[in-house]
Amino acid sequence: MQEAPRERRWPNLKPRDAATLIIVDRQGPVPKVLMGKRHEAHKFMPGKFVFPGGRIEADDRRMPCSGHLLPRVEAALLARTVRPSAGRGRALALTAIRETYEETGLLLGSREEPMPRGPESGAWAGFFEHAILPDLSSVRFVGRAITPPRRPRRFDTRFFAVDRTAITAELPGFTGPDKELVELVWIDIEGAQRLDLPPITVVMLKELEKRSEDGFGADLPVPFYHEVRGRFVRETL
Image (cartoon, rainbow, N blue to C red; front, side, top):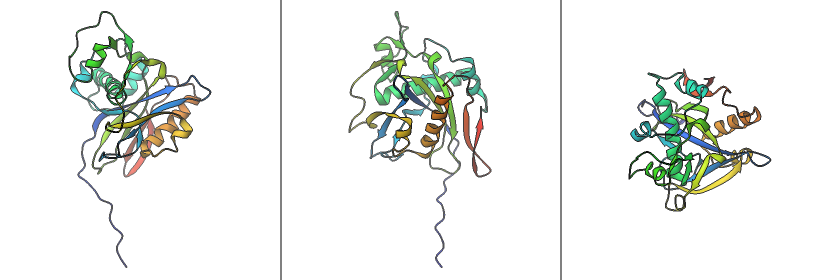
């Protein structure tokens, strides 16, 4: 009898801080979310539909903004973290906004005149060019998930959400056949769950659906998915 192949295992990497942004359109009869399809040439999740997002970068810690995280949002971001700090939570929310701009061309925030001085290059330069500062008061923290151990890539991902009305400007040319996201779609949550999705995205869509039914308030519990003794568990922050 042939032995079943063993599951491939990798060194137990430390998860890297990352953030994702879910933009929700609640103007119609049912809420819709913005999703992008990843390029088929990507080694990581090729062809999958995802929310914009990525790893935290140094400039995210220094970016000015026009509003502050709500106290409940900040408290949930600080929970269950090593060396928690308000600056880290703020930077994670800004990461989600920056990555959304880089992948979709959407600038989220409020117009500011006069603008503080900012960088002339890099992703944040686009915000200064268009006189827009991210407004963290509109950001909601809706979920957190840590990639299980022994995976080729591991992330400690915070899932944020904002209303579509937070979009202040939309620039062309950020998606297409030669870009990270080849297309963008606004789709209702039920329909989104039928797309080709990473498993954690399916989980977060279900959480978002329940959160929407409960009024989408900032004070709702934040689900936290991580592995404990070989089992993927759900706790709340």
